[in-house]
Image 1 (cartoon, helix red, strand yellow):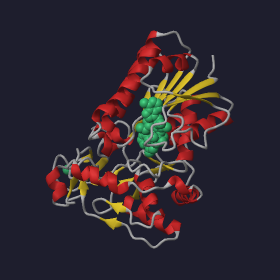
Image 2 (cartoon, protein in one colour):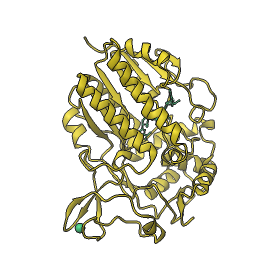
Image 3 (cartoon, protein in one colour):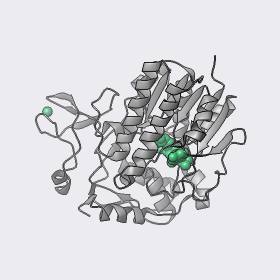
Length: 378
Ligand SMILES: NC(=O)c1ccc[n+]([C@@H]2O[C@H](COP(=O)([O-])OP(=O)(O)OC[C@H]3O[C@@H](n4cnc5c(N)ncnc54)[C@H](O)[C@@H]3O)[C@@H](O)[C@H]2O)c1
Ligand SMILES: [Zn+2]
């Protein structure tokens, strides 16, 4: 049997909604299960971009009575519903584990204990499962240091050291087989979700894939959610005439990938078996410092606001992590297309045309981090 009905949990959210559009365009019948959490959907209603050709069910992925019949009516489940902020997960521990880990456990329990026709499960994993990225020591080759100790952050010694010889090491793209370290509760739950789905998938022969998203950016990204990604947070600051706040010295390397490339990769995962039973990095393969991103956003917006470089560290932050996208290229033929400047110009056009997209709640979130003792040198 082939896939016709696709269930997208979290399909009212940012990545899910773009995937819903792509699936509808490819004539899948799409059902969305989403609880419309207030932090993401401030109006409490389905977003204006909800696709009229998809079916929308408001409900929680922890509620079996809602989730089970939807799973059983589908041939594919894309599981994106999740609580998504690293910082917040460090003080809302119960909620993060409950939504992310237990929600996924319930999905798997349904798959294992009911009759269904699901032949593909895609679960959203994250760059967070790596902790620090991969590094190269001139003497010891590719190494995988752990998160920097508090004393190192306090000394503003931002760069990583080789775990063997202690010398400074340079960032290199991270392959999927790098040792995994989880440095915050959110990333632990992403790791649980990925491991559980791949394990049950392999055990019961249900093809499953765990895309490890790097920094996804693009229209519909929540700009008002201070717990969302850095690009969104800075854009909302700039739109409100305020300086983007950059932690450390701004030299942190990341991989920003356009939502359009992400959706292309997800469709490949759904339609092709190449990446079945694997975690797969989903990035652009382009490496950039976060200070460059903050400056690029201001330039593209046409404002002359310099970022505020705080030289403060956050206890759970990693220094560098960029994507080795070889596995997605080789197993799926994934070929990211959107250059960074073009993708950010699109994000900005969207933000400007959506005036209520950007209410700046960043200071409140920063205060929460400070109160919990998670900021160093601040
Ligand atoms: N955006 C990124 O850069 C990024 C990076 C790595 C991983 N991810 C993962 O990708 C997935 C989608 O992320 P996003 O950026 O689109 O987030 P998002 O917050 O925009 O979307 C998540 C959606 O899930 C819904 N939701 C939350 N809890 C729910 C629950 N208990 N029951 C039902 N629905 C619930 C929310 O209402 C929201 O619509 C998440 O699993 C996230 O962890 C995203
Ligand atoms: Zn070394």
